[in-house]
Length: 155
Length: 287
Ligand SMILES: Cc1cc2nc3c(=O)[nH]c(=O)nc-3n(C[C@H](O)[C@H](O)[C@H](O)COP(=O)(O)OP(=O)(O)OC[C@H]3O[C@@H](n4cnc5c(N)ncnc54)[C@H](O)[C@@H]3O)c2cc1C
Ligand code: FES
Ligand code: FES
Image (cartoon, each protein chain N blue to C red):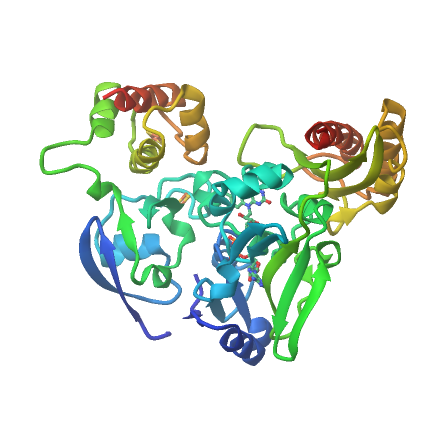
């Protein structure tokens, strides 16, 4: 096996270090090494968005980023969305609007929606649906999710 | 994923050296949206990924009076957020805004789209229509190849051992010119083109001065149909002239039948998309 790499980066605002094999994805490193299991593996091929994280300000699929690539970079995961004062408005609106059932897609949707609201604080329904087209949900259906995002944008 | 190594060279020379040593056991990593999936699923058997994103030249992006230079690894989102490019090259915007979803656009590069050499790749027809050239670096020096000559078969390119794509160059937009890309997919987002058409036209008063028409997903490689563009030159771009160009493009298309559509359906779509994309390009070309 190829020697493990030592990676230093910032995760959810805090300096972080971990070891990863060159073949590991960022998703694998986050879940198995850093033990942040909020990002989910849905498809492992870029189609579902369950693994979404924000990498240097950009929404990415962490299954399509190599762990070795994040040296020196800054990552926000679902674990970094709530603050010590409580849930993020998106999280609150997902809960109140019942915008989840099994919850596997939820971390990805919330991270993606956070990236949307950072770029566009007052999205139209069309904006939200377009931005979230790379996130799949197999149980809730998209209407409740979109409504929760638009509701959170109003807060 | 199988065991591999990862290298992140900082200079072109370092990268060509590494690629030359490893030959086809190494592949470049740009945005990773094709290569990571292919290696993970065992569709590309390699030993090493060479991440080129630390090389300054592949991150270049300039749009000025001399034209447009796009580094091979610049992601789609950086291209479409650039106001000067959006204004001067709306046809290119059509392509970079429809590749994947937001997450893919954060990473996917035009270099990756071209070097992956999928016949259905969305950016290639418009790169051809805009007369793009590819600047290639290699162990024996640099060379340039027009985009339409870059792909040689599905998944294959002109790149030789140790070579990689550094950047694209496009001439400045000609006066009264316009370009457009349209693809047909069964849904609005996140799918592979059944057919794609990228076109560019230049007007001289009411007449067409020059035109280029390129197609995706109708042949083993993206296709420049030079005759279709030539048929428009000197015409007033009336319905009959456009119908003739579309018919030439349909005749040049050699589509296969697969789950996305059979050959006849694809040939029909070529006609529809060439007409529609020309209408958009002509509109953009008008003063
Ligand atoms: C969910 C999803 C949706 C997608 N949707 C679309 C779509 O709508 N339209 C579309 O066209 N594609 C789509 N793709 C495919 C892919 O995103 C694009 O082809 C993308 O442009 C590839 O760029 P990349 O930078 O990620 O390439 P990479 O994966 O990094 O590289 C692709 C290939 O090119 C080689 N390569 C990369 N850069 C260079 C270079 N500079 N020199 C030499 N070789 C190089 C690599 O070794 C590899 O073989 C999609 C992919 C996914 C996962
Ligand atoms: S697990 Fe990454 S996109 Fe589905
Ligand atoms: S809640 Fe189950 S996949 Fe969305």
